[in-house]
Image (cartoon, rainbow, N blue to C red):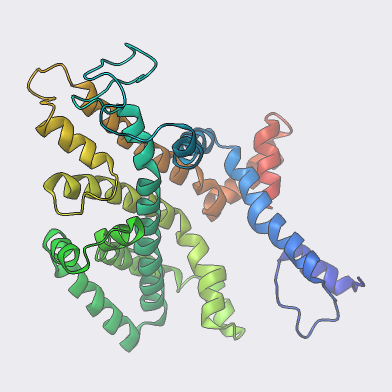
Length: 344
């Protein structure tokens, strides 16, 4: 590959996939290598340097393993699979106890994990994806586009969420966890979209955005390169909030019997622990309520820690501070410095 001096300087300052009009010939493997280094390796190294990211990733990894390998290795929940009404740690046959019908409580938690992960991922991606698309476009374009998209968001916000989900659940009778996640967040995106629009209204007046417009940079490229990276910390935090909302809402809806019971969910465990086992009436079955509650609590904690840790990757102010610390620290903290160097 031949590089001129000017091309080398341009490549060092800013990575770009656009090669039209340039004398530099870049192969597909070199593009993939640069994409991996710029968008996977370096951000991953910086994110991993944060303690919150490591803890959140480890917790989430446990859930992923439960939802993939765990459902294969651990027995599926069935009636009379173990002795009835076992207490936690009484026997390794059912480490976290069993129900009155002889169902292993741990097996119920493990085999509900894949559906829960798919549900919160679909709901979180749908809510934040729609909010980012509508919020950034409305805030940046302004005028008629802004008025139409803002009116659409206001209409979505004005519809009560629970009645809307109940109607959609009756109409579609969803049995796919991904569809359930989308239905739960069908109008959750509206509030986030309005908040993103407000931030974009400020960002579009920044000097670097104005410079891009003056140079004739296209609107999609300005949104991707200048606007969205500056709101990514806010988007990631709200992705975690949307995913947590899906978890809590699905638990509540399953508890109310609105969603079909054919899909495993920790909410069904809570319902059975309360209605059938009398977990809150002093029947000695509180563990059947605590186990799924712990599963819900730790997955929510993992999402929060991951969102806070990823702030290092996407927040320009944090990246600038890290770069400054790397120059002044002088090797006091090897991990921090190496992570900061990746961002420069």
